Image 1 (cartoon, rainbow, N blue to C red):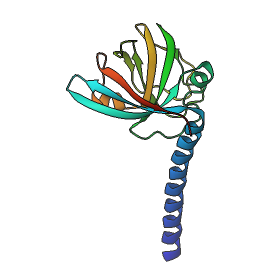
Image 2: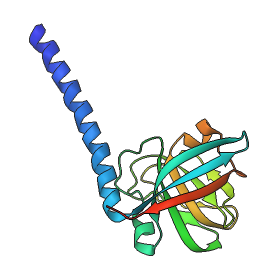
Image 3: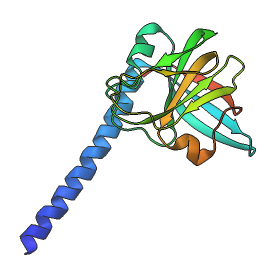
Image 4: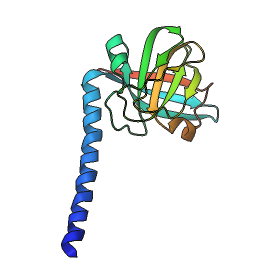
Length: 162
């Protein structure tokens, strides 16, 4: 009986270690492709929520997005920046994790939130109003932190990719 328990414990330790490596490798891979920044979201309940984000600011980076990423920390996300305000469309092709998508206008106001997007879907997800940015966060974050249309996004420092 003891060897069986030991093998289960070893399996659990290996699984936890592998999931940690996956998260670390996702972050390291994204750090090589994207610049990093920090942003804050001010919600109507007078709270500030801080996120570490990767910046997708050109066609190639926006096309890649969070494809193939299997883990995001609660305070991580990706900010897609566009040169002009317009109706924006996103999809979840090759995106393995559900996300919340926050559409942001040029003044920094969140104009639309899409909760819990479906991984690997080719369905189009559009802003309901013109936007110049989209913030993708781990699914459930917007509801948990009460981030809704009208909240304000403030981008802070930007750091080059490592």
